[in-house]
Each structure stands twice: as C-alpha cells, then as structure tokens.
Image 1 (tube, rainbow, N blue to C red):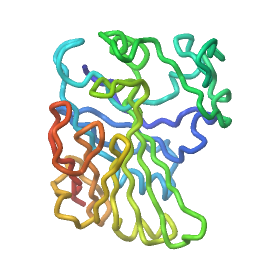
Image 2 (tube, rainbow, N blue to C red; image 1 turned 135 degrees about the vertical axis):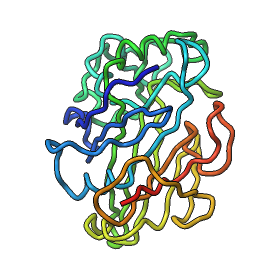
Image 3 (cartoon, rainbow, N blue to C red; image 1 turned 60 degrees about the horizontal axis):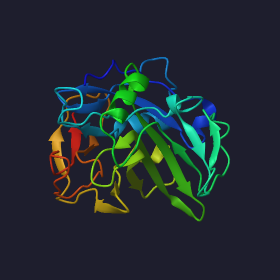
Length: 266
C-alpha cells in the first residue's frame, strides 16, 4: 500500500483534548519518518520537542491487497467521527446501540464501558477492515500524536508521549482500534529545559504490559537517521518495529525484532 504525501495537521479540537501536537509521517522503503514542520505549523517549544524525537515506524510492505505485509499505518482519528459506518455501543449485553455516526463532542465526556464499533467482524476479518481502511484513510496522511505531560507533585519531571492509532490489529489478539505509544521522560520540569538535554528514560507499550529502558541502555541501538537536522544537539528518534512497540528482541508479524533510537545528524 502506498501512503499519500505527508503533511502536518491538527485534528478537530473536540477530538484532541489530550493532544498537544499532531505531526505527519512519510513512508520511505517501509520506514515511516517524521517530516519537518512547514512554516504554517505552530512554532512552539512543544512542537520542536515533538519533532526532535519523533518516532520512525518500520512496517512490512504489502505488495498486494489482502496479501502478506502490514495493510495499516498510523492515521488520524478524525475520520471516525460523524461516520455512518461507526456505531457507539454501551456496556449492556442487549440493545446496546447508542448512536450511529457519533461526533467528537459525543465522545468528549466520560463513557466508561462504552466502545466504538467499526464495520467488520474482528475474529473473522477477511479483507473487510483493510478495504474499509483504504476507503476511509486512503488519501489521508500518516499521523502520529504527541502530548507533553507533567504530574502534580513532581515539578522536576516531564514526559513526552507519542500515540499511534491503527484502526485494526490483525494479529494474535485481533481487535479494532489499536493504540500504541512511546514515552520519553526527562528529569526537568519544562519543555524549554528538555530541549537543552536528553531524556533519561524511554518506555514502549506492549499488549497489557510495557518495556522500559534508560536512554543509554545498550539494548537501544543508535543509527544515523535519514533526515538531517539544522540545530544541535544530534537527535535520537525512537523506532518501533513491532505493533507492540517492544524495545527488546521480539519476533512479531514478521517485522524486524529490535526497535532502534535513530541519531539524526545535526
């Protein structure tokens, strides 16, 4: 599947209450890498930090529709809203249909136990989800969300979260709406300070678990990145090579086993 040209975009405001920065990715030889922000994007420290450590995602190319390879890529959640093919269901066993085509506002309040129901059967997906993905996101840019987070009572700690949304997970535990995340942590309290130093910790999501490593841990490899940067220090970019974002050797979906931090030359 060929991805469309990348561009920087922000989701509709109601859908992005926890989203601080949204940036797009481009596909090059099976590698998704962050594209520098055009001049019209918000020029903020958060945007700069998000771009500096933006994830690169390695996916197995798919030569033909419904064939081997990864048919899905990280995309925006915006097409899910006001979509007549999407239903909102409640936490009841029977008659649980709440609404067809829910809006972002409908989902912006706490709905514990509710879920979006996409068109398809997760345990017997066939080509249905893949074909729906192509119709809905075929001309949409590949997208990663970034969020700068702090915690009350910990003034000298800062985290940068990257969130990647895949409409379907067609692996062992087949399910709709798969979120993966990579998180960087600093022993500083502000974004401006984070821009002057490197992270101390990196965390990768896994199904019902996670993986943590110090920034200088030898299991995190450093490579020369494909995208030159104009401002020092050299950047290190997280590379996720399994849908679970594991940073340890792990075979999954036939992808490369060890995600790497890519050093981008100044």
